[in-house]
Length: 314
Image (cartoon, rainbow, N blue to C red; front, side, top):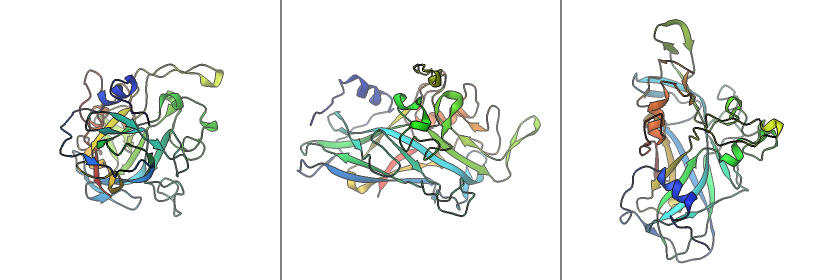
């Protein structure tokens, strides 16, 4: 097995975007002394404070206005999973291409447990709350952190979605996650419906019933339908999440996203401008607060350490 170190440019870039650093000596675990590759299922938990995200749940006391909401959509893509040793080595781990809602490059987490974006009565066949990885790490190495990137890789983000392999197929698993105005995918579709709706100061005729959080690459231009090669987007908006294992074994952990922490600086009952909620628009006043919490830069504000994802027991 080949070990990639921080000298590798692409993986060094990954670490640069993680935000923050800390001593890993107290949180490292030593794997069993076996060279056999392991298939590990890592549950992903979506919560809002102490409430599990689901179509029937009422999410309460959210944001600066203490809003109560129901769920409209709750999905996000991840890719580029890796583990980090206590010596700073970054070792990519493979996604299991045969697992549900993922291929060898990207996985889609989908917490809608009912069809029709929680409006239907049937079960959502695309529900997925697990990432399945294949790990082959030298037993002498001590693993301290788990890495993943929120989003879709650039080389897959601007291709013909009708020809894409699941979970990027649209129509199909990724239906509703297309972002045609930016020639790509929404990396997140974290959408809620605040009780009482949403108003806009000074705009008595404006109202909305859905507060959306759509993170994706912006400043993109590519007429791929006419054979143009996509150019790098001005704002890639891919955040790499680095999670300390805190002494846990990979087989015993879950990844948790806390929506309450994500929107704790946002007013879900009032929108100041742009699209309802944050859709990554350049001047959307609802975006800076959520970008900061996801560890993404915004305008002149540099990225800080993300605060919404954590490691919890399986």
